[in-house]
Image (cartoon, rainbow over all chains, first blue to last red; front, side):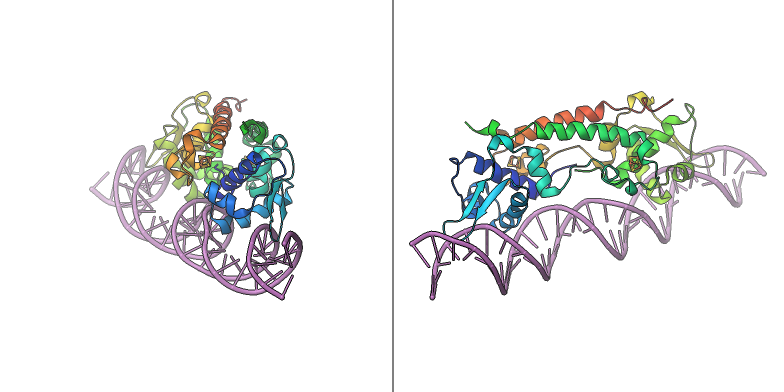
Length: 134
Length: 134
DNA sequence: TCTAAAGTATACTAGATGGGTAAACAATAG
DNA sequence: CTATTGTTTACCCATCTAGTATACTTTAGA
Ligand code: SF4
Ligand code: SF4
């Protein structure tokens, strides 16, 4: 039920970038030091944020990362799903075939969990990174 | 971010018991067959529901399980936490010491996650097993 | 009282996931 | 050209997941 370490690091990294002057490129080393994230692990996580369209990267001398959108347009849900894949309270909510009982569409547990999941995703979507900038 | 298989089985088992005539003792074998749960795995899960005060058990001939409370007094949150322990969106929400950055109390990510978590728990608490009985 | 039928406790396992590290590579500013 | 930056792929070990196996305890009833 918890986000993993990589996701927490990703949230820290995005928040850090959101606080930089708009358009400023920050290298991985700096994010790593400021946010206390093992550099090699951070470097492995960043590409998933890039694929999700949350950050942009530049290689070579003077390279680094910048947000690809305004902080207000990046939600917690975006970051979580970029790193962990779709948020699902139970696997049958992604694929009915998961259920050993095969009652998925009519299962009342399934329906209740789907309801809770929708609310959870809405809550995660309700938090963005603009709310954290002074 | 998902409940595990044991928790899904526990929800099925509690729902099954909730649908039995009140006070009727059901043996593990029957729950296992009806809900398609490996019997030995079910037998391992049940004690956690007992410790949480959700079901009662009887041993020996004619033994089995009964709900310890009315279905309306058992929430999804109760069952989930009985099997998996406290619901936490991030480990720092259980223990500040988890954070490598040590900014926990003032961390805005932490605060946002705490907010989402509170809503999630409220939603899980909002579903009980009375709503599923005809 | 003996026994078969129930649940309990503990230990074990194969495979997947988590949280990284290492090494080779690719792009780019100067 | 070269030093600097990110990318890709492969690897690693510890923990968790989803069970199974074995031995044990309780209890109704013949
Ligand atoms: S029993 Fe219901 S909730 Fe559980 S896996 Fe099957 S459909 Fe999903
Ligand atoms: S950075 Fe914030 S959210 Fe992440 S572990 Fe630390 S306190 Fe928790």
